[in-house]
Length: 355
Ligand SMILES: O=C(O)CCC(=O)C(=O)O
Ligand SMILES: [Fe+2]
Image (tube, rainbow, N blue to C red; front, side):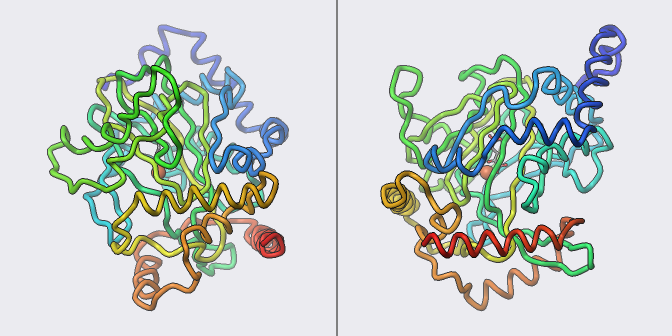
């Protein structure tokens, strides 16, 4: 856990690089112009709900971003751990995280702000993550509601719509664990992927001391993404995925978060959906059908929610649970809320007309 303050002095160029990266991150016009090259929704849809983008930020910015995370003092990192509890949509996981909203300092804020400029017309919630030995996340599909406090003070319920994970680990190899596994895609054909990804996820918790219920999705193979420095993976929620336990003492750094939509796009996990494999197969078929019907273009979250077979109206106890959650969780604060709300309403109309 040696903090890099000393190293920074020994490598004067490191400091200069960080300053250059911060200047870039703090330049609204530079970040917006860079991000404008990505038509994210189109890319995600073209990739059947998921896309990986290599060289996501300019290389010197990625170097600076890694330094921002490496320099965060241990006191800023919060232990993010949960035991398996399907009924509250909690999944077994353990890693360190720092929420943008709760103070990682101005450098982290600048880095996370860059991600809001990637999809400027959606609400978002981003954090930094640091995984260490044995840290992992069991299979889950990211479904969750997030309360957002508007500039008027009103708190609205939003749903996670699009996940982003941006990797900042250098020279990571498969044997180090910590792989992202997409459980809704087939394994990559070829020698590097032998279909054991699901069982890799299945060992989650084994080293961490907790005895976990085996999640049904853990029996599935999936497509393995070894985290690549300066790459980002985006996917539409809900989509089952996991992070396999780290088998190295090198830390794995990332930025992760969600673009949100107002409203409840889907039901939360109720504990009744025992057959995850069936759910996955159903979503895969629905994606393929929607893709064929639209000549490859999916009507985004609408299709994913429809694929779940949800009617949209949550059950009363879920509603009550949600209200409790809204009171308990500190809401994300959002300026520019009126513009975002108007844009969200437009988008919902567009989607409705696509269906
Ligand atoms: O770090 C990753 O590869 C994925 C993280 C993730 O699934 C999450 O934070 O929900
Ligand atoms: Fe996730």
